[in-house]
Amino acid sequence: MTIPFLDLKAQYESIKDEVESAVLEVLASGGYVLGPKVEALENEIAEYCETDYAVAVASGTDALILILDALGVGPGDEVITTPFTFFATAESISRVGATPVFVDIQPSSFNIDPEAVREVMTDRTKAIIPVHLFGRAAEIDEIDALAAGRGVAVIEDACQAIGARYKGKRIGSLGIAAAFSFYPTKNLGGMGDGGIVTTSDAKLASRIKLLRDHGSPKRYYHSALGYNSRLDAIQAVVLSIKLRHLDDWNEARRSRAARYSKPLGQFGIAVPEAGEADSHVFHLYTARSAHRDAIVEGLADAGIACGIYYPLPLHLQEVYRELGYAKGSLPEAEKASKEVFSLPLYPELTDAQVDEVVETISSVLESIS
Image (cartoon, rainbow, N blue to C red; front, side):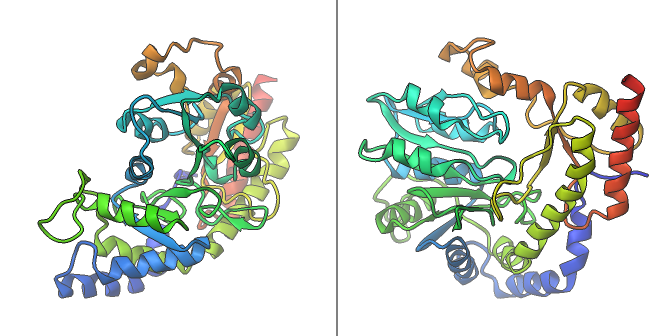
């Protein structure tokens, strides 16, 4: 059977009437950018993430850039992060003029290794950006301990992890601020680009609000050089509707992930660790195998979509050649890039579809054994 990697149409059909009614209301209102619908979403996200403030912006990438800018991170500063993530994490550091410093990952979680962070901290370290990759919470306590007392900000890249918890606390409430993405493929995705910053720091929230709208405290008056990074009201109402379903959708993702993991683990595949309760929301179901390429090819032949996140770590990307990293610099990230593969996973995925994926992988592995 043909199985897509993600089925956004199925999700839309489940909330179609609510969404269309809300969107038509916005269209009739004539208020399309920021405004009361966006403010309502900000309040809802802040409450959900257990923070005092949320500031809606145009994308998850902008959320990271705005946090760094608002904190005064810039030329001469270093920001420590993982090389095993989407490019935007490092790109945001470079965009404010700072230097990304890459450290290796934990092979079991794919998240940044706190001990590796310790080894590269210098007087120029201004921030650390751990990524809650694939929906799995990073080891924030250890990173917070490294930053404490050194004037180093911990910024969560939570773009893939809305709804996850770490030791009972919501992702998004654990650092000075967090960045979330509302790109359509995310667990909470809009119908276009969008993002949000969460924080409990009043000054930081106020600064980001200023910067997102051309540094303008009131129309046509500008006190800072800012950005055009405003969220549309249509996206806000869609996201508000989807937020009501998010916990149920995340639980469905966990259920599908568990159905994958039990048999796949018996095949010798390294399946994702779920961690403690609620610490993983499975934005992606990413496993690893030395036979990755054969598995991906076999799935494709069977009409089953599969993804590779990520095929080349950021420290080896051409754009960062001048930083001086070489093959072998960060071996765990490099090894993961050669072994990882992500399987179809979304709340509407059926048991029969999961079983078909598992059976296909079993057949591939039997053919090469």
